[in-house]
Amino acid sequence: MFFPYFYYFFYVLSNCYNSPEEVNRVLTDRISTKLFCPTQAAVDNLKNEGIVEGVHFTGDPMYDAFLQYSRQLPVLSELEDIKGDFVEMPSRYYYLTCHREENSNETALHEVLKAMTLLDAPVIYPVHPRNLKRVDGLKSDNVILVKPVGYLASLALLHGCEKVITDSGGLQREAFWAKKQCVTLMDKPLWLETHVGNRNQLVSCKSEDILGKLSNVMVVDENYLPFGDGEAAVLIINFM
Image (cartoon, rainbow, N blue to C red; front, side, top):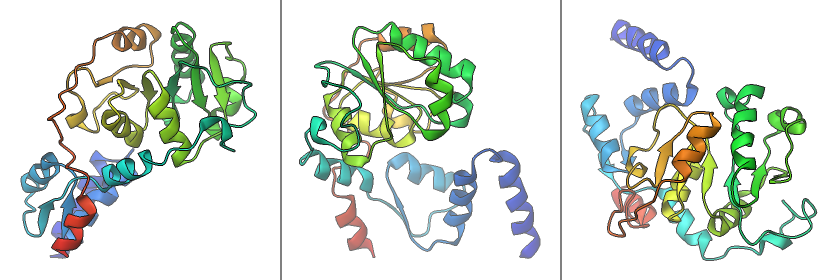
C-alpha cells in the first residue's frame, strides 16, 4: 500500500502547493476514524473523495462560539486592543481586514485602500504586522489604522459595522452569521454556503470592483442555516 499513498501525497502537493492547510486537511481526512462536518457540502465533498465511514454532519463549532461570545460583547472604547488608536469611536464604520500574501503587495493594498477612501463612512483596519510599513504611505483620513485585535474585539467591531471587507476565511463566516454584507478579497470561494443573496461576494483587488459589489443589495433568508443550529459541540460529543 505504500506506493498508492506515496503517489497520492505528491498529487495533493501538486494541486495544493500554495495552501499548506489544504494539504493537511486532505491527509488528515484519510487517517481519521471520525469526521465531523460543518456543512452538508463538506459531507458531500468527502463522499466524492471516497470517504463515507465515520462521517457526520454536526454544524460548525465556530458558529457555537460566535453565538456564545456575541452575547457578551465588550464595549469597544474600553478595549485595550484599540484604546488610544482614535479619539472617538465613529457612529458608522466599515470593518476591513487584509492580510493574505497575495493581497499584501503595495499595488493590491493601494487599490483596496483607494476603495476605502471613497466609502460613505470611516473604515477601521486592524493592520497585520507584515502590512504595517506597506500601508504607512497609503494613509487616508477615512481609514483608521489600529493594532491587530483579539477575538472579542473583532466580534464587537463586526456587530457594530455597516459592512465587511476581508480576506479572512473565518471573518467571512462570522459576517454571514451576523447578517452583515461581506465582500471577500479572494479569487475562489472558501464557503459557497455564504454566497447567497449578495451576502458574500468575491472581489478582486480593484477599487471599482470592491465598490461595485458593496453597493449590491443584500437579501437574508432567516430560514437558511447551512452551518447548523449552534449546537455542534453537543452533537460531536454525542457521536463520540
